[in-house]
Length: 283
Image 1 (cartoon, rainbow, N blue to C red):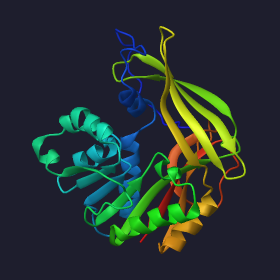
Image 2 (cartoon, rainbow, N blue to C red):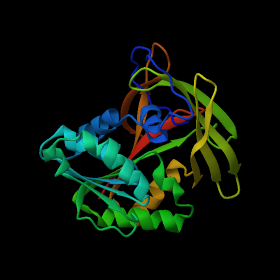
Image 3 (tube, one colour):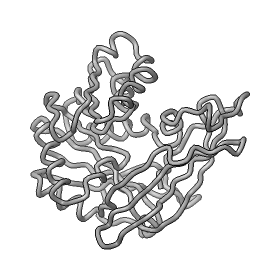
C-alpha cells in the first residue's frame, strides 16, 4: 500500500543483506519521496496564498527527511520536526542533518515530544505524512490532534495530510515491490496488512525487507492504527475548527492507466483497489 516511486540507478557493486542493511535508510528509499512531497506542498501553498511560506513543522517526523528537504529549498525556509522516539531523531541527526550545510543546520530544530503537547511556535505549514495520524484510534483522539495542529498554525496556515484507502485497504494481504538503494543495490520492500477488525476499523500492518541473499528483515516497522475514511477525516477536521478541507486526488496517465503524480482538488475519486491522496486543511 505504501507505493512511492524510487529513482533507479545502475546496479550496485555490492549487495544488501538483513545483517548489513539499515532499516531507516531502506524506509527512506522505498517509502518516502520527499522531493515530490515538498514539490506538492510548495505548489499548493503558492496556489492558495499570496505570500511565501517560511516555517514548516513536520509532525511524527521520524528521521526528519522531509524537514531537511524543506530547509534545503530556500534560505528563508526553516523547519521544526517533532517525534516521540529519541533514537530515531538521533539517527536523523547522524544521517540526514549531517548532510546539511551550516546555514541549513541553523534553520532546523528537532524536538523529542508529543505532537499534542509540543508548542514550538506558530508554523505556516504543518505536515503529518505517511499516514502517521492513523495511530489515533478514536474520533476524540483524532479531533484533539487536529485541534492542536490548528492552534500551532498561523492565521492563514495550512495542514497537509496524506491518506490511503481502496477496496483492498481493509484486506489481509502482502504486497512485495522491487526497489534499489542509492547505490543501485536491490532489495524487496514488502507491505503486509496482517489483521483488520471491521468492528472498530483498527488494523495491524508491517513492513518487511528481503534481500538478494534471501535473508529477510522481519517486521522492520510495525503499525497499530485505524483505517480512517476520507469522509471521517474531513468531518473531524471541520469539527476541530478548520475553515476549508479539500481532497487532492491523483490524475491518471491515459497511456498506461496508472497514476500520473499530479494531484488536484476533487470531489469524485476512482473506486480503485488502492489509492493515496492528499488532504489540505486551511486554518
